[in-house]
Image 1 (spheres, one colour):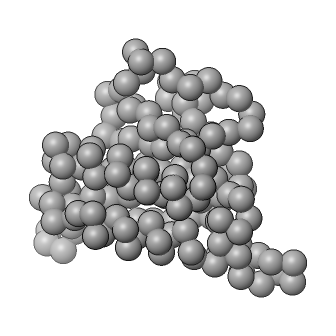
Image 2 (tube, helix red, strand yellow; image 1 turned 120 degrees about the horizontal axis):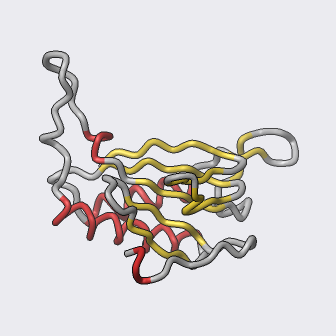
Length: 150
């Protein structure tokens, strides 16, 4: 499992000009899932992400976690994050898990992260895309996707 974590003041996913998900201050997480990943990896990564002290405290020192600041999380899982470029000029995606394994692990990661952050979340399947995302409950009232979006 690989994760790229970016502290953000806001983040969103736009598809065909329509905002499908958006968050305020928090974390934008790109999550890559490999063949050998499992629940142990999820547990470790969720604990690490939730506890990372990368937000400033009152003294301007990075000493607060996303939980401490009440931040949100947007998780996108592109299979391309698992690319290997060690050999040749063409990336190899052999290490990326197929959708039969990746989707359940992604959903488990999102549920565990939601529990760790203490915020309800829903998962949204992006049509015709290699990504999935999670959007914690938002105070701006964006609509929850309809079943036809799944």
